[in-house]
Image 1 (spheres, one colour):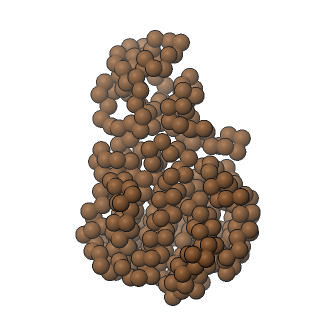
Image 2: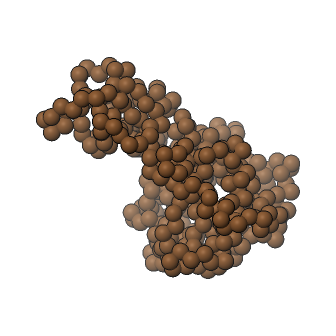
Image 3: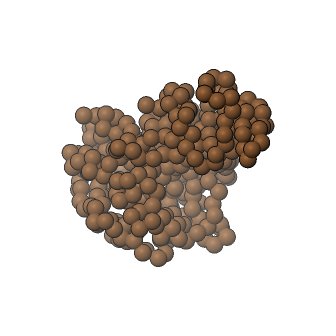
Length: 371
């Protein structure tokens, strides 16, 4: 069974993932490197014999599965002898799912409601201690912190959807450009250039707010170039299968760029030219909407709809919520329709913020191509 057939949904059950990992053939070592707070195994994969040591971890936020799907595709790709040369250039240590407890129930936090990406100093959670243990044992030359981001982000102010975004953590108070940050910036600049051919205008950059509680800043402060990679939204791709393919390309390009040291041909200025992320998108705009709110009727409003991803019967459902309305909303919609197309059994919409808008759920699924 192909990786695509196994992992084409947003939900990635830890047992299903671990079964896939155990079936891999072209790996040097698959081992349990520790256990979660609920005693689920956390697996690590070692591959490659090259001099450049790269540590990658995914799903420290349990509901961010896209980069894990890309890692699974990378494992399958590297089983093909045509790509064996990549493994002669690098040594990889990969943690596909750092937060299996959160992954099991599709939530961001771990089972103790702790954000593992804010636990780098306290190390209060077993998952955080597992990651640090591997960091010290493997002693990487480079780190990749793999995440997923919401559909609201654009690449630049009112730009295209941010399908892939990057951050080079500083590791220095005040955001000073340390040596490790400089290398991370140049690697990102090189990756961005390769992405612009297939993904023009859809690569974004996060603003760096220094915080040593964050793992990226912490590892960068140790002098190790660390790259935070965010898998975002590609138009119409709510299951993130297209985005996953671009993340796979990023990972392959990163290996090549690090191995060849091609990043030395780039500058930190090229990193800063990547447009900064902006929160400009909603999942759906319903125009010309009559809205009843607090006993007052507002005509011809733009109704803003966003999805919450909720695990129901082992499948992620995209539940529409009304988040705002305006007679001229200053934002973008991944999809825009007129109220006249909805055909509700009412002549107006009763605005209820943060309450599921179930009357249009199936209609929106068809408009957004969600199955």
